[in-house]
Length: 204
Image 1: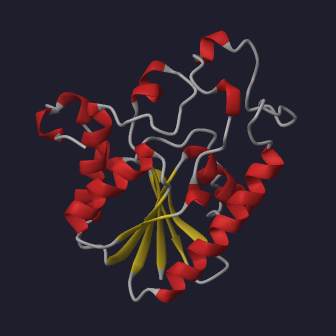
Image 2 (image 1 turned 90 degrees about the vertical axis):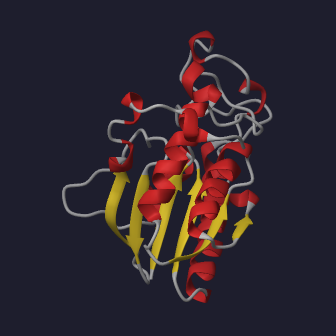
Image 3 (image 1 turned 180 degrees about the horizontal axis):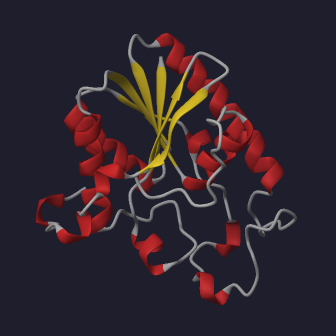
């Protein structure tokens, strides 16, 4: 039993370096990334996809569903950390580190609150994985991936928790618990993407 942990594709907000709103869509490049990932995962035995309900994750999950032909469900616990009133602000205008350990965004989540939510999400993910006959794909966000890797996953010798999780990066963890990381933050499916035309990326 394996869990395929996935960060969503690139968004307009990622490209423009803006703190994102929940409804921020995938960019054309993000759609192409998701399609590349879907083709990579074809034939891997994934039985179900569970996704954050934010637009960027849902659109990534939909690209996977079209290729893999498996059901998708949504869990709000897999949402990105809530940065509250900072949403919509360009990073260059912040003037401080919004990821600092002690920083509490106005009307948002502290790290402590966020980690507790991720813990709840991970418990649900494990239960869902145990109930499936095949593997489970989880489409979520960069900080969720980082939180899971730092506190719930057993990394291979020599690996460290990445600070940055790439768009449509693939992390494969093998279970049951303790969940061992077999592949970490991999984007091999994006090789030469920028040299390829994006005309086949389609519409959401």
